[in-house]
Length: 310
Figure 1: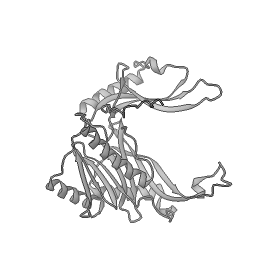
Figure 2: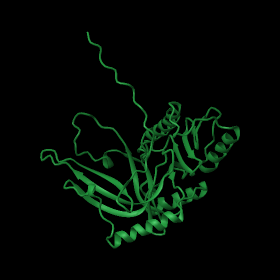
Figure 3: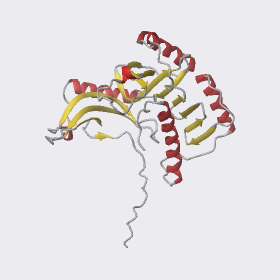
Figure 4: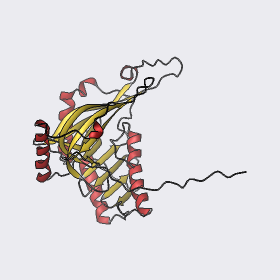
């Protein structure tokens, strides 16, 4: 299991939440003590979840809703929406199944930045969810359409050949000039300004981590930090080096927060016939040792069965 941004498209996003719930439950059942322990929700917890969902997202929770829990993870699945929260760090995921599912295009005047961002700010204020230090970075646009297989040109432009059905705002995080790597805020609105998609992973960051991150920033400015040897390769192009605070993703069993230097790079294969390129990121500490924020217990796969000889 790995942590990643929710894929675009409501059905895929809903599947992601279901897969996360199943992975947490299955891993513990297979005996991995590091994973959250599956448990029954107490009646008081259910009542709290129902109230929170209604207050934050204006959604009524039906009697046949599916409630599940594993450690600090709590899930609510219905035919209308999917919800997840982590009580230990107050992370939240919400997905309305109708978000991004429409035959009607978005009104161009309603999705301009100067119009949409204030609507999102008001929706966040109504929800009571907090994400201090957020900064808008980009929109994630989604399109829906179809085309005949025959005669389909590789130059097809989805923006003109399909319907623009959703626009989700993406935000980055910084604290007093220190960027935070790994924090996420995605917000998409329904036509009535209600939240249709939300992913909030904004863990608390202590002052000690901020001070150490500022030290890393000084080491970059004064060029006293040395690029690790593994990043000095002919097939690697360094795109960006930035110092800040990194932390693990929303599905990681334990939260890890560390001052880190993030290197964004592009690796190109040396094959002259197929010079494939891939872009990635790695995190390092002050000594140049790599930091791995995502740590999951290893789960053994199905034993390989040798074919029978006849």
